[in-house]
Image (cartoon, rainbow, N blue to C red):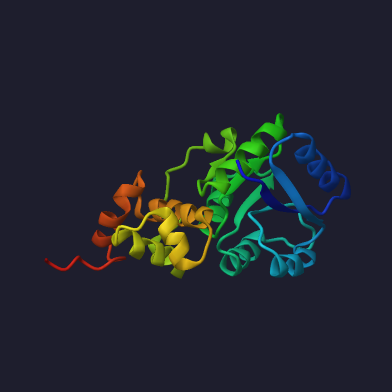
Length: 216
């Protein structure tokens, strides 16, 4: 696996340095490019460099509602995977995070290192990740991202898929990474309620996201 570039936000100094050390000692190809106590401190770094994943602990003093912050970060940096660390095992809260741009949710509990590494690897591939206890909650599986919340880039990926372009070809055409295309495909599958990427185009046509193909 290629080296993943990660930024870490945690208000607690001990936790922040502990997480950085945990990732460093894991031996996994993960590079922490910066650690911050607040979202505001992180913004200038996000503007200067490309980051694969933003890992953010949701216990942030002064930020009682993390959802709008997550949404703005996702809109400004759609190629970046957002992973939330939390102690809140609440179905509606977790669903709301995913609806607004989070792609990974890690519950702060035992064996954190292995869960965290799995989350980073999974999100880097454009797939959603939930800690096992969070995944076991009695979800009624609302669509994690409704069609109306898909970004312009997600729609562009669907359009290129309709024309038969591969992941690599989509990335080259849009000037983005392969991982960003994988993330868009994951969001499209969730929004369209399909299991495989091969089903995206047909479902998008049925739901009006893509035009009907012209008869040949």
